[in-house]
Length: 70
Image 1 (cartoon, rainbow, N blue to C red):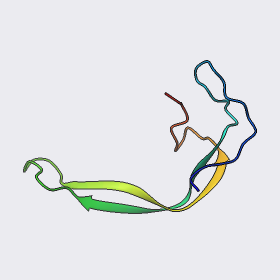
Image 2: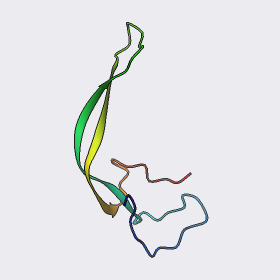
Image 3: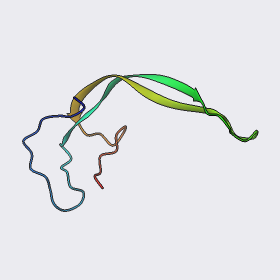
């Protein structure tokens, strides 16, 4: 799905959400590495990123999630 059902009404003023807003976030990840082509010799061509293996709905945590809405 990639979404969480909620009955909360949106807030029309920034930050647009409550701190207890539930979001779809990852619960299990695998750390992956990709090699980027065309990098300069003095720049690392390796890009490290988390790949979600399992997601769930939980309260938005600024420790690992961007919780603001633009």
